[in-house]
Image 1 (cartoon, rainbow, N blue to C red):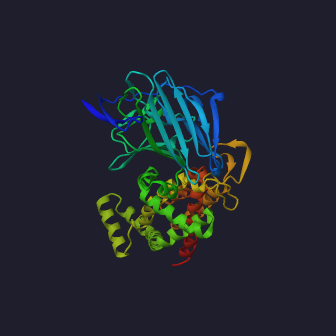
Image 2 (spheres, rainbow, N blue to C red; image 1 turned 180 degrees about the horizontal axis):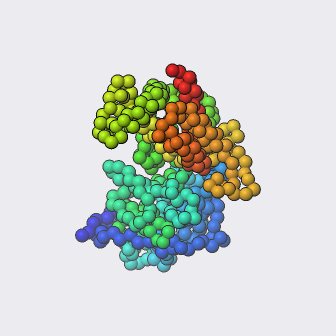
Image 3 (cartoon, helix red, strand yellow; image 1 turned 90 degrees about the horizontal axis):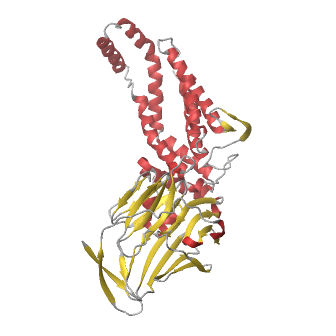
Length: 482
């Protein structure tokens, strides 16, 4: 099978047609285990970020984002041309661009990164020239970056690969080698930042090549042949910045699908838009979360009211249910029938208390993903909390405690105490066979939730704390009613 390539001859305004083999077999660059010599690194600085380049590779080792607490986004060797024989030299570095050149007896490759001064988009131009007197075959896969899935990488669980096709965007982990035909754009990301690349011309395939505990993510095209004195230029549009939908949409809306929050992505996107809207008025992400918590609570208030009343009615019926269980302990079918008749007579739905919780769970998990990955919360402070994307860390202990570590996070502790009080209030006063179990749950549930929330982002704990506090206040009110 063969395909026809039209390669522009820059020296003469004509086009030549060359047939080449179309079989694609992406292979790793073979240098994934290599660490660059420190002397080969140089830093390119702009207002928002600092890029560490590896000169011989003409590749990006990492990006430090100055406006986000100097967060380091590692690529290892991003935008590398995967050919071990290439050795580049930096020929110029201006405020607008960095240019590298490789020269050997057969070809000359010019690789230029062109930067925008206003945002995070970059243009990559690669010019390949045949400087020999014979045709040469060229195949230069472009490595977008390397993902480290080892246990030592704390960001590993947030990493994924986004593959943009004509129809949809796939989100995949990089735990095994994969190939994707007809790729429109390719992206990779960690918790807060992402890198996206889109070829401007040509047909490209994407690949993930797993090597030990690391994976190369890149684009590959078929071989092409250059006649003597011919040259070809490849152009790529790049985004290298925070996972901020407004920023990405301002550059290329189609790339926004790279930012994904999992199963409840749709709800996460809505919640983040609401948070962003509120933030424009209050100018503090902590107060935005508080207001969002109040809004969700009052939105679900009718269902919460029904839940509380249902729980109260169940407590009133509990002694009657216990009597029925004793009376019909040898006849389970009769017992269940009588209990259901009791519910019907008193118009009690035994499952009524579960509905608000079932509606709350998708919102909670959606908000969990949104706040966990929201770059806007990175470094955002609220009251004593220095960073809403991290535990609140009221103070640090000189020693490490089991489960808790060496940090005292006050929000989950207070939240657990509030849950304990709420459980105690709702505990049925009548003695029953389930009373001991209820007392045990009264202790276990707050402790369990406290441990689960203890190391979560304080922004998420703040939301649950506000919600639990409002539930506790209402529990006080309804416990006093007959």
